[in-house]
Amino acid sequence: EEEEEEEEPEENAEEESPEKEEEEEEGEETEEDDTPKPEFKPPPVVPKEDARTGANKKVYFVCNDPGKVWVKLPTVTPAQISGARQIKKFLTGRLDAPVVAYPPYPGNESSYLRAQIARISAGTHISPLGFYQF
Image (cartoon, rainbow, N blue to C red):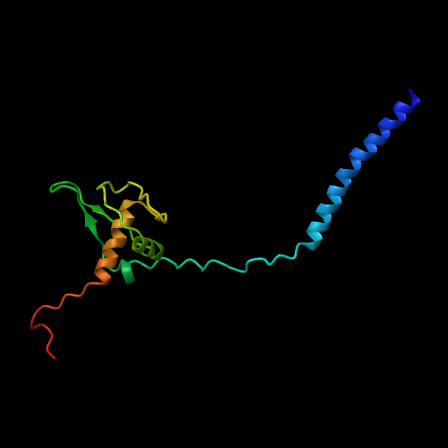
C-alpha cells in the first residue's frame, strides 16, 4: 500500500511537469516573437465640404410621382462620392432604403442618388452653340 501511495505523487509530478514545460515554451515564444508589425495607417477621413461649395454647391429635390411632396436630398461627403464610383446599383425609389452592395456603401439610397448627381454634374459641361466665341 505504501508503494502505491508513493507512485501516485510521482504521477502527479509527471502531470505537472508538461504544464510547466508548456508555460515555459509560451514564455520563450513571447520573448522570441520578432515578427514585423504592419506600419500601415489608413488615410485620414476627408472632411465634409461646407454648404454652397464644391460638390454641395447646389441643392437638389426629388419626387416619385407628380403632385407629391418634394424631398430635399442630403449633402454629399467625399466618401460617398468615391463609394458611388465603385458600385453599380439600381434605385428602388425609397429614399430611406439601404444600399446593399460590395464594397459597402456609407449611406442610404438618398445619399447614393445625391452622390450620383454630384458625379454627373461634375463631369458634364454644357456649351450652347454660338455662346462662346473663339
